[in-house]
Image (cartoon, rainbow, N blue to C red; front, side, top):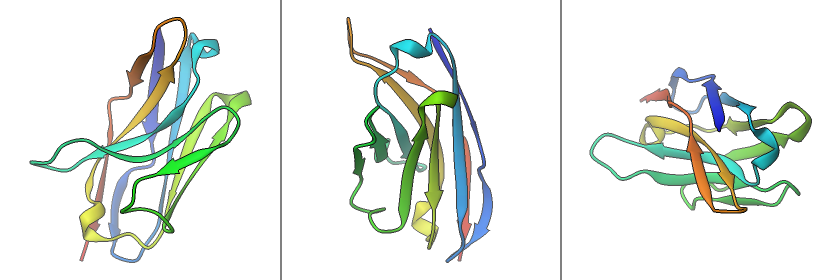
Length: 118
């Protein structure tokens, strides 16, 4: 099992920045990809960004050029630097740790609220 603990959410004005952190514990050797998803009220959970163990990244279209994902494998942690925040970025942000072998499985954090005021 893998446990994920997110931190760094909060309230920020439009145009501001926030940095989310997620620390994994437990069976961390089994983790392959890590990343962030978000879910706004009344909407489906959507991809924000993912990063694999080699550092290759993938971003959702709505955050490209504004958000940066990074990872510290030694600390079993993933980070999300969010710049130029917009009110539409308001959501609960969930940390993801993906295990690809022997069976693909997703571990999720509890989520951290990000609110961007206009």
